[in-house]
Image: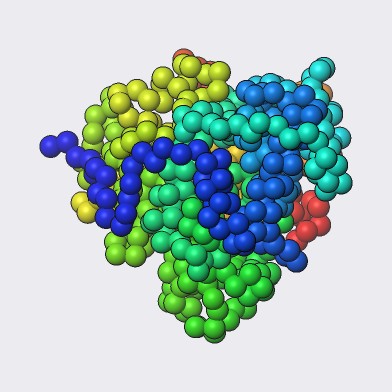
Length: 525
C-alpha cells in the first residue's frame, strides 16, 4: 500500500497562505512597536525603528547610484547588523538580493557573479579586491562601510517598493550537484510563511532572544530574522561562531534559543559550561545532532535540542517538536508540507525503505519559485508533482523522517555544502594535475565530512604538497580546502560507460600510509 505522511497541523495557530511581503512585515512592526529591540550584537543594538531607518537609508542610496527596480544586487559581506540592513534596503529599492558566500573566491565566485549577472555588487572592504579580480566589464562594485551608509542618509528619499508575496526577493546560490551551483529563486512570501512556521514550531515570543551563529548569507538567517520580526523577539548575532565564546555570548545577550549545525554543537559540548539551570538558554535547533550533543545539552544541562530537515529550496520541511520527537530523526512534517520517500520510478515507498526524500507544500509561497535561468533543472526537480530533494532517507512507521545521506555529489564540511564538481574543476587547473576526484572522509567531530582528493599527475610533474595546498587556499573557499590528498595512477579512476564520470564508490574508502594530511604539511598537528 502506498505510504506517505501528510501535513498534520499540530502546531497551534498554523495559518497557511499568509499574504504579506517582508517589507509589509517590517512596516507593521515599525508602526506597532518602533522602540522594541530587534537586533543585538556585541556592544550594540537597534530598535525596529532604527533598523527600518537604516534600511530606508540603504534604499535611498542604492537608487541614487543607479539601482532600479528589478535589478539584481549582489552582496559580499561578513556577519554584521549592516548586512541585514542591506537585504532590506535592496528590497525597499525594489531590487533583487543576491547574497554571496563570503568564502568564495576565484572561479567559484566568478560563477556566482556571472550567473546572477548583477547590476551592482555591494562589497565590504575586505572583499573588494576579490570581487574586482573576477568582475566582468561594466559591473559596478560599491565598497560598503559605515561611512558610506551615513553619506547615503542624505540621499533623496525614494518611493519605496511595496512587493507582493509572489515577487522575487532573493537569488541564493546552493551547491551544484552534476554541474555548477544553481541560483534558488525565493519570493517575499517565502520568508514570511517560513518565518511563521519557525515561529510557531519553536514558539518564539517577545521574551525570546535568538542567538544566531551561522553565516548571514545562508537561508536560515533570512527566515529566522523574519520569524523574530513577527514574534517581537530579538535577533542577536556574532561575526563568526566560536565554541569558546558560546556561553559568554549567551550570557551577554541573555539568549533563550540558538541555531547551529552538527559540528558546532559537538564543539560546544567539549567546552566548560554553566551548571544545569544557570543559563538563560532554553532550547536549540541543529542538524545533524551528534549523540554527544544530545547527552551534553539535554541530559546534562536540561536544554532540549530539536532537529530539522530543510534545504534552501524549503527551509523547514520536517521538525522535531516538544510533543513529538525522536533522537536521531529529522522530525516529522508538522507544518505545511507533505513528505514521501520515492523509488527510482517515482513510486511512493513503504516505511523503512530507503529512497529519495520528496516533499510538496500545502499552500503557496512555501518553496522556491525555481532555479534562476535553469528551466530544465526546475522541471526535473518538480517531476511527478513532488519536489525531489536529491537526499536519501526513509520514514518510519510513526512518520518520523530519517536522513541517510546525499544521493548527489555534494560533500558537507563544517556546516557548508561543497560541490564536488566545482571543487574538482578548480583543482584540475592547478599545475601538474591531470585528473582528480573529491570524496568525503568521515569526521569524528560532528559526524560530517573532511574532504579528500585523489590526484593523478601529468607525466612530467612531481608533486609538491606545500605548493599544492597553497594553491587550494588561494583558489578555494576556506571550507572547501581539502584535508587529505592521495596521489594515484590515472588508471585507478574507473569511468561510467554512459557519462564518463568517475565511479567514486570504487575508490579506496580509508586513508592509507601514502595519504598526505594537510595539517601535517602545514605544521598544524
